[in-house]
Length: 480
Image 1 (cartoon, rainbow, N blue to C red):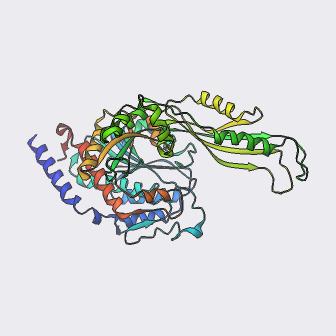
Image 2: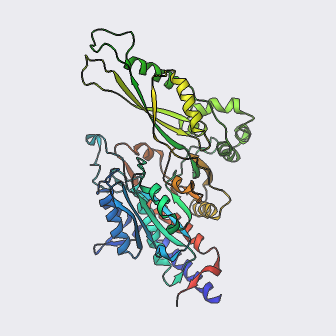
Image 3: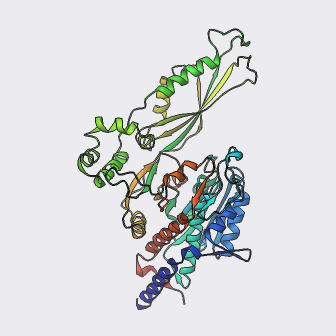
């Protein structure tokens, strides 16, 4: 035991000293040393729009191997290039702390409105620019550096956990590869004790009484994607000079008009009302009372929630019309077929069949067919009473002592659901405090992240991982 305590003391001392120099921590690649911004820049310069992830995946593989990690591929083709880079080989069978991120990015859109080319990886004095800088390559680089740093700090000992960087494909399109493929085929090999994925960063302005307080949300659940295609075929006069009594575009527009004007009802669940109660415990005065008793003050709260789409999305099944397309290229020809696409997001416990029945009632047109493009199984939330959740909360508050941490549900989907649906504890968070303006550019033009986000994220993740592996001294073994 004395040897173990001496080792632990040394481990923590080294960790403390190195934490003071996060901005100079480097990894090797091709005989050169790279800081976090420099490696992120290189990563961004490899275009990896969904379906074209292989080159970027091979880049990550080289970085991981050259810095002493054990790489296991779980698919090596475009749309399904997935790699696990671990401190120990996965065949060691250790319970695994997995940091999950994705390689693919969304298309760049109109390149002429980008201040710097979208795949330039331009590094300014304070930021790194380019498609994927925030979603999700920046987070991936934080994860990778965290695992490499823990591998360096644990030389000479056998930790009770393996620690793994897991990068997957097609998160943005949910193509069936990526994390879903990994969870379905490699769960036994991975032995996940917990999965930490992308989630919300800390934000200010959440609390009315304390607008300058940073709130870190750790997601324990997320909504389910249900992507639908609507099709309508109506044979009618084809020449645009004569308006038929009934034609495809007209009927689809009328149905969609009913849909977009429909006011979805607020649905209270244990999960979303708990979010309000947590915020209430941090507020003051009347607002504190209202938020701590959301069911009692429902008639007051719901109108206010409707004014904040980001918050109301946690209390309803949303339907967003994302595209309408007619099969014609001529302005004077009436198409017989028209299609529309809906991005629907369901609350974790929502009944999909009932949702589809309700949708049909709203559209009020039996001729419209509804095709499910993508759906997801029910996703029960991960437990709060879990040491990994507690370790992440403690790590955040260590580096942001004036902040608050809250559990929450997020309205978007991410890859942790592939593991959560199989009973694996899974949490999502970006443990850094940033200005809201950076969120406006995710999936849009001029995506970028501040350099300090990399350093802050690295410090918190390494702190979190240290807490996990040294929780029980008796499980740490010094390697002779």
